[in-house]
Length: 138
Image (tube, rainbow, N blue to C red; front, side, top):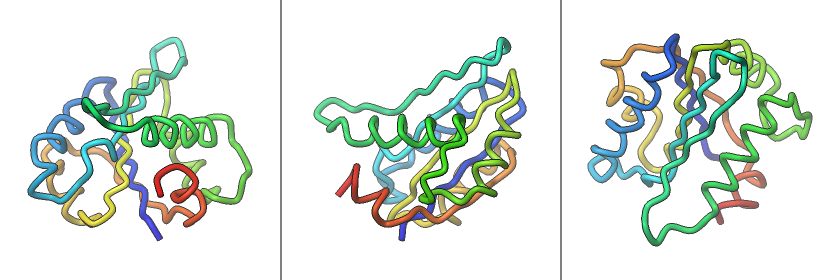
């Protein structure tokens, strides 16, 4: 089972900075650089999703992140994402905030969180259903 990490920040820009740090140290963490995304809740309440798309990467991660955001912000009830986690993310995505999402895979939750600890934030974790992961990424 794959973990999903969400690190919530009280500022629109910090999740992007943390994602940049993860990209910088992705190789040493054994982290797929496409396994991160940033959601910004604009001041008007709209959402902006940014995912890392390296040249030659498949669209699988983009589909995964888009689907995940849809489930979280639209309060989807597909049973694949813990409803408590969805609620925590929804509350954290207030206007003017951002969240870094990471599916750490082999990297491990502790290593990922430690590598961006200098940015602060509130760490939320959720195991992902195997079929959600395999539907997009296997």
